[in-house]
Length: 452
Ligand code: IMP
Image (cartoon, rainbow, N blue to C red):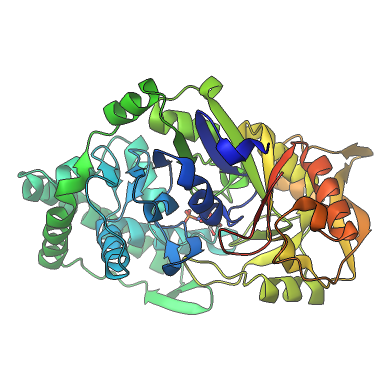
């Protein structure tokens, strides 16, 4: 029997590359068997697409487990929360008939709040970086985590406390001063507009924050969130002690990990097993970690991408795979499956197994390539020794060519029914990732999943 058919204990669905590997769908599928789904890191920079009987959803902060009424979904204390965005997401789900109560969704009271000044600082930092910009989502993720590390900022428990206005005012004063100074600094550099993708977002002249309006929005969010804010660690522990099944859902992927990713082109949190354990208190030995890899690679924003395809095939994959950032709408860069990067990602994430998604997107491409090694300085690496920017920019991918297939595979439900060339592709992918494959995905809906 396939291991995932009846998974036991705690299951962590990690992402072995730069995110967007189809975690949303995998979690939606696997949550059927779960008692709890815990989102561990990141914020509304993430965008998880779920396509099920209720429609198509792009979730940013709420776990895909929300579509299973028996599941308790947890937004962990290591997530950064934009209160307005969270409330909007809750309202949207409710409007589509998804019930959200304290019984199926709770928010950690020790998570940090993303405030308007964090977003502004994120954008100003990008301007200051100039050509070296990271290509962030502009959602204020880095500055909020920065403040948390600096041991400052507001948390969810402040938002719902009766002293919020007082704490807010203290914060407001110095954050406004900081943004004023940063704005002066960036305009001195002579850059007039901040550009996200192709869009000019704002001019550099300092625009004051509207204290009254922000406060009003925060009060509204506090009223909406108060019933679901709680201390989540004791609840997670209770579930763990009772032997209930906990599923972990990260935002982003291993190669965007702040410590082990393609630094500085990374996000500011830990999407790997360390992030799951830190967010839940569950020790790694109690977790089965499955690393998801897309049948081809994508990346949003700047940073190295050794197998990138800047040609017609890349454009074809981008179009067929609808590879557009779920949060920012930016087209994703596309490339061949990168084995050395994925197996490094598996090492970083502590993955014991793998899952391959969006195989159907490759249907019809005559000749496929999988990167099975990096050539660098006279050596071949089948697993990247690290993903340092300098190293990644220097490596020469070594490819294995495989014949493609033309048959429609979107209705296939058993591995044996896949075309021979698709099977060969899958086995090569498994070999280069270096972790046994436990599932394949051949389309966006739950039933388009093949367990191995
Ligand atoms: P930030 O997380 O907004 O600070 O952006 C840092 C980098 O991570 C940028 O390259 C973003 O495009 C990337 N990033 C952040 N969240 C996601 C995601 O959910 N999927 C893919 N890339 C992401």
